Amino acid sequence: MSACPACGNPPERILDGPRLRPPHQRWWECRACRWVGVLYTHSGHLETMRRLQGDEADCVFCGWEEENVVSEPFERDGERLDWLVCLACGRSNTRRLGRMADPE
Image 1 (tube, helix red, strand yellow):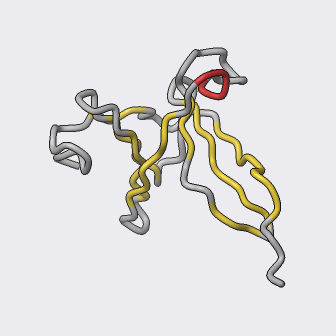
Image 2 (cartoon, rainbow, N blue to C red; image 1 turned 90 degrees about the vertical axis):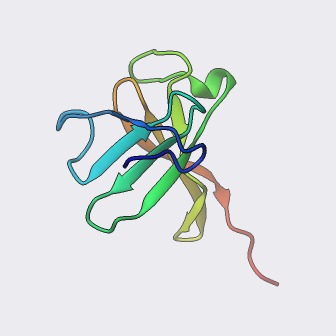
C-alpha cells in the first residue's frame, strides 16, 4: 500500500510477524491522520478499523492503553457483532453488540 486511503500520506506496516496476526492479514497505520486498516491478501479487500476511546480502548489481554480498534458492525446468526483487535499485542476478539431486531 503506497498511500493512506484517508489522507494520501504513506502508511506504515504494523502487527507484522506471524505470531501477531495471520499471514493473510496485512495491517497498516497512517501516522499523519491515525487511520488504521487491514488488507486481506487472499481477497484484496481493505477494511478500515475504528479507534476506540475511553476504557474500551485499553487492551484486556496485555494492558496497553488506547490500542484497541474495531471493525464496522456485522451480522452473524441473528446477532450484531464487531471485531476488536489490539494494535499492541495483536490479540483479537469478536464482541457481541446485541441481537438483530426481528422484522414485524
